[in-house]
Structure formats: structure tokens, C-alpha cells
Image 1 (cartoon, one colour):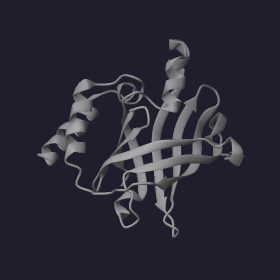
Image 2 (cartoon, one colour; image 1 turned 180 degrees about the vertical axis):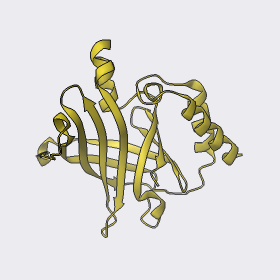
Image 3 (cartoon, helix red, strand yellow; image 1 turned 135 degrees about the horizontal axis):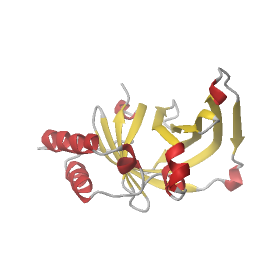
Image 4 (cartoon, helix red, strand yellow; image 1 turned 90 degrees about the horizontal axis):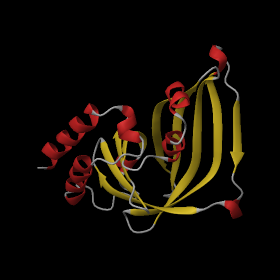
Length: 196
């Protein structure tokens, strides 16, 4: 059942436009398929250190209520929204020797006249019960990939002072070889596909 459900979920997501998948606009059909997969999660305690399935680069292919980046753009007038293009949103997870999980959340954005830029939030997950983690970000980075259509890559990294860091809860509710599903503390649903 889970393979058929997974195939149907991926088929439905592929049929949606980028904006429909990652901007705030939940799909009841997609959410129902995700819930069905969560009910048959093949990986017990996906955040446990012995689960190497978690490590790697994961493309975000669906966010039921959008993301920090896409919610910001959703409030921009249509003219500007047509000119600003979000090319990709992804997350890279690495399990460290001390069993901490480092995360880098990234977005690639093309801005009118300014070229293509990458924005990153670097942080870590602290596992609490095998499925739930406390997430905290320690630095934000912006990097020009192709500013003004020239080859130049400046980088600006802004550390977050420890007393200013907030923690959020993150639940990994489904994990297999190439699909990962997570939920934020407010119930926002995120579907990731492994970047091969």
C-alpha cells in the first residue's frame, strides 16, 4: 500500500506548479496521501544516530503552508512576484560524530537586475525521542552565485548570538531511501525528495 501511496503522492506533486507546491496553499488530497504514508512509516525512530538514511541533500517538493522564504514572497505585489524567481529550496543534513545532526537550509533566488543568490540558514537538531528534534540556527549566509550576470561569488555570513537563538520543534514523521516527511510545531507539513 505504501508504495502505491508514495507513487500517487509524487505524481500529484509533479502535476502541481512550483508555486502551488511551495507557497502557502495546502492541498487536502496531498495532505491525505502524506497522512497515509505517515501511518505506515517504515523507519522507527528516524532521528536515531544509526539511521544513515537521514544524511544527505533533500529537495523540498511540498510545504502545506509555505516556507519562511515563500511566505515572504507571497505578500509581494504580482509584478514583483513575477520578476523574482525561487529556483530551488533544499536541506542538507549531516550526522556528526557526537550524534548531533547539523542542518543547512538553502534557497536559490533570482532577483531582477541583481542575478542569482543563495540564502542559507545553518544550525543543528537535538534529537529528543527518535522522531522529534529541537532545531536552532546559529548563522545565516547570503552568497551571490551570478550577480549582475558576472562570475563573482561574495559571501556574507551573519552569526546568531547564542542568547538570541530560538528553538523550534521538528517532527520527522516518515523516512525511507528517497522520501522524507516532516512537520513543524504548528503542523506545517514538508515533503522532501533525496537529491541524487
